[in-house]
Length: 218
Ligand code: GAR
Image 1 (tube, protein in one colour):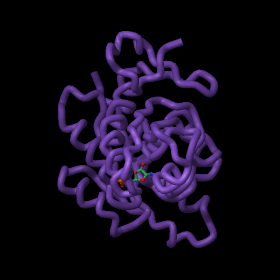
Image 2 (cartoon, helix red, strand yellow; image 1 turned 180 degrees about the vertical axis):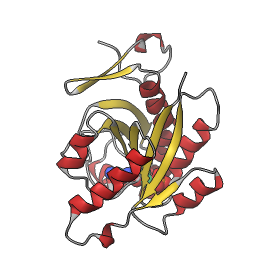
Image 3 (cartoon, rainbow, N blue to C red; image 1 turned 90 degrees about the vertical axis):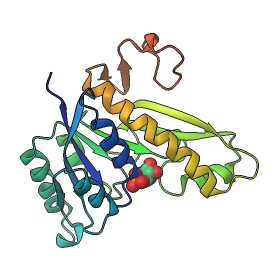
């Protein structure tokens, strides 16, 4: 069966991109990365893509000052040229407009380093520590126009341990991110994840014995 074509949008380090590259290196994985697109020419993730032989493109937001639409149209054109079917934001640090989000409606997912809807935005680990939560984690969700909102596909929780600082906590969460992003993409690629209104329904989730990561099917 044809593998789902991914476009991965990055702005920096690209460790989540690497997790997707590693997953897609298995020919049995149901998705393949057709394009890695960065808004920064010096994003380290571009090197990861190049090393894996994956096509890359840079659309620099600074080339379109004050014109977000032109920036997003340029990204959209690259994604379409590459035949992308699902867009994965992986540390992409520009807010997308309603236009772009609607253009890719239900075909645009993001990974965020918190258990949404808690701790939207930046500095999630420091804010989780300041709030004294005992559980923290990460979320893959379908993107909607409001920042860090949208139907939840997969979440993973990690404990907040005594003595944690934002770096130790970030490291624990990041390891979970690297597990759940490939899992979420697989659910879409297998046709098991469906957006119904503002929820994602996962077919056969009850059969995932031992996995508390996946939303139970309704
Ligand atoms: C990840 O922790 C990701 O969850 C976060 O940026 C980091 C990117 O790391 N994304 C956001 O905060 C988006 N709101 P990476 O480049 O190594 O994947």
